Image (cartoon, rainbow, N blue to C red; front, side):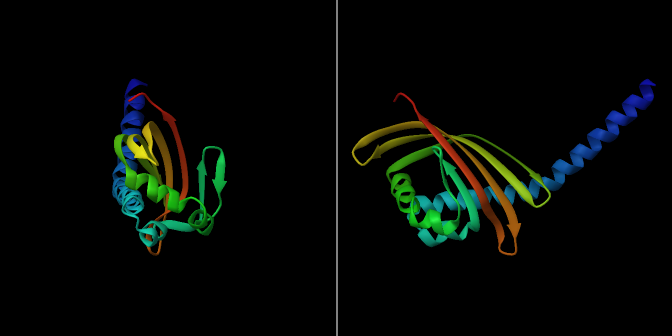
Length: 151
């Protein structure tokens, strides 16, 4: 009985290990894509940022929702670029995983600086879901939240 349990646990560990090993390249590629999106925003590269988003991306922030790349482009993209250009964001933690053609990237960060004359000090979280496309990994969902912290 104990031998059978050990064999089952060992087999389970091998299967999980293989799944993690298979997902490692996908998660690494998706993390590069999300970092490129943020870098483009901070650099004011509108086209570069939009190129990382799926046309049907859904973005949740502060209880609101933008339901496409075009809607994001016409509403909050310019403000997000302005904010990121004026502040500094430091990643605190990142975790990612994959299932098939979908990768999730979970990031916690701290942001400081001055934006439109106001001091900024906040802790943020981001959930990013990316799907593999013919053009590489594209962001299909973002969920951002933040809260003020003391400087």
